[in-house]
Length: 309
Ligand SMILES: [Zn+2]
Image (cartoon, rainbow, N blue to C red; front, side, top):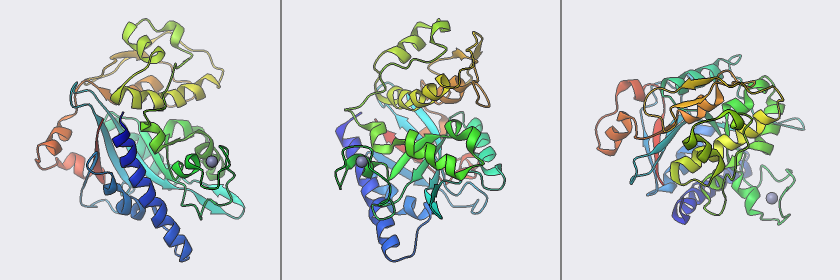
């Protein structure tokens, strides 16, 4: 986690904000794909984007990117499938609609994430300063509050939004309260701290206990900041943890994790920690070595974003 990487995502956010503000000032509005296109390359060289042909335009994957956080020294990495969404305003309510086609889009995102063995995430564009001018600042009340501005691109998992997807207003409330600003995900001054997961007492793996209890670096820390938000939500659902475990396939850093599903569709440990690997999947190496992308990857996502951390 470096200041340079924080700066890279800062450039992405500023470009996105400026574009959303320009379009709103002109009364034109904006869509997710355009914001991504205008901003994503501003993160170079720390954040590298590879875009594929938009073969699936209209098919629901036009806005999905595979993100891989890579530690070049250890080879460890963390992957996540990220779908871009936007905050909307309907009458006097804020909304985020993740339930397109009666929830089919959410199901597709979840299925694709399973195929790639990574968690399903959303990057929500919450607008420029003009669009969000009526949203109250919950931070330091500075008119140019940096924490508010960082929220322009906010990251939240599909699992956190799972039970409320039919209500765009409830989804927006959760996004505004529980998402992580993209820059805060990589800010070296912040940290996930200790994750008091409800399953912690039953976890016997020393490595997994250490991951939850102690400070982490690199891809492990990114995974932990995302997982912490889910573990916190899980702790509030009051259903009891269970002691059974489940084994993650492929090349996981933590091969055996609690099977507990809470109120989620599957084991949330497996869903998130399957993205945390000892080495990158073959298609990431293909990109790094400038080989063509296998159709199985290029036909399912709009592109891949590689982040050296
Ligand atoms: Zn603020």
